[in-house]
Image (cartoon, one colour):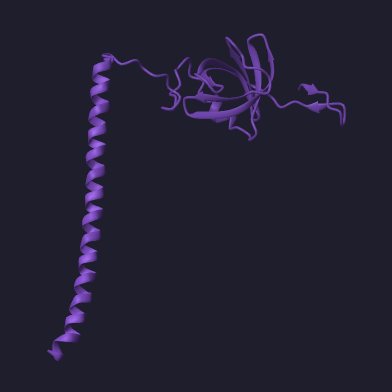
Length: 173
């Protein structure tokens, strides 16, 4: 058992770490970076990266079936420790230790794949012009529909008013 010093009682028992070797990805606000999870406990992880984030940074860690949000609490050389707010299921995460499988990232995190045939400026301009014409036609259709609806309502009200007026006048003729 390892003990850590605390101001209250001098020593505090440290939670055991589970040694793992998992490939993962980490995002600190920008593009994802490859990392390696070296050990894990219910409240934190030891990670290794080419360029670790500074202390206090919040990171998202993407494993094949888990996404973990944590805060960097220490950093030295290429290794750094993160702490989570909620306890993690160590067995579920460490049970994935099947070698270097690439984690599947959410679509919002995946790097953009370049198009095979990039569009030319003329093609982009043609698409923009086509979109503009379609939106103008849709706007015209909506305005026409609203105008026709208003005309029908006004005509109906006018007809009812004139019909009641003629009905009152007809007996006197």
